[in-house]
Length: 483
Image (cartoon, rainbow, N blue to C red):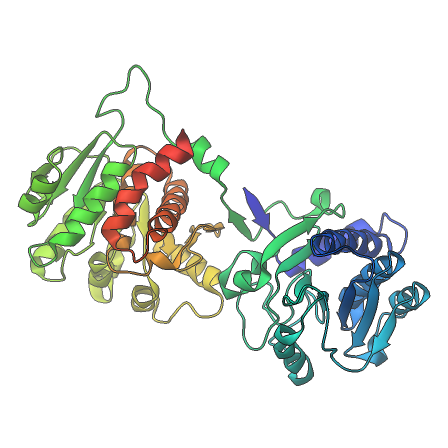
């Protein structure tokens, strides 16, 4: 997995490490890594020698990293110009190094550049870019290089203007093709709209690893994690030992939700799916292997329940929800089940000892929490998880999984293709199957979001996507992933 740390933890680690090193060592390490990455990019478009490089230089260490990297490129024959946004607070040693290497300063944005280094502000910034910097950021897209293509933008540590700890973009910000970050990933690299602004993220090791806080702010799963965690069958496996998942989803009015959640569950690792609901005839007709009944009370033995997708919000639906919550089994609540929990006595039903997963989109989150997730989506999800004593899977382009203890995961495989009706039903079924197979709630949620995202991407390759397309893509995705 990958991990990201908040600014305060990064600053603390830097302070600890700098106390053991000669002054300026960390900046030189960062600048060397930055210059190397820039040189590699320039080699792809004609080489470093003669390349036009523009440095956007703010104050402090971020500006120093940029200036020293520019000096390194200038020594290799690049034409390096530095636009100083705060000349009175420029890093003087870095500026001297640039001038000594043959680089110059400029007062205006040029018309041509092959590569631009965004060193306007670093990880200590707050809010969007100020007017001068915002105007410069808006003008970067007009710059063209020697090949006629748009100039490449390399962000130094983070794109200027993003909120580093939350991944929000509160105002004007730079959009980078590549972000070169130092020591460790930060939340903005993996969270929210800021992650999109980062482009490809390249991590330069400057020695922070041993002194970073033990617990990162955010964890990001990778394919190897999902493969390692996925349940495997053996010679002694049967349909019961693999797990049986129960689905209290869909209704006469919304039979599609029942069909889609069932398709998601069947793609998962469990050995049997039991369906309980008024859409049971539709489910059995489409999926003959499913054991169906009319009510949760008649479903038989299961190892986990999925409840809510298309269930409705009437008295019958409320009864089914209560039956599910009354069990001592892991439970996943989605869609209408979340709506039924809002207000009155039903909110207390969440206080249960058995594992609970809630999968809201933003509107459902607002109904549960009383307010929208806001700019700090990860923090909001963590607060709701603590209040409900549940694992919260907050849907979105960068789906967040948060636990009551404050552990936060961010899914990297999200796709706009999943922003269509019914894909959440598929996700609920898949996640329920993982719960029934015995996976811990947080791991099941992380795995389901990861695989579901891959299925969305695969389905999107053929054009417009429906939830049925995503459900159909689950099996080939898992074959490719698990081998």
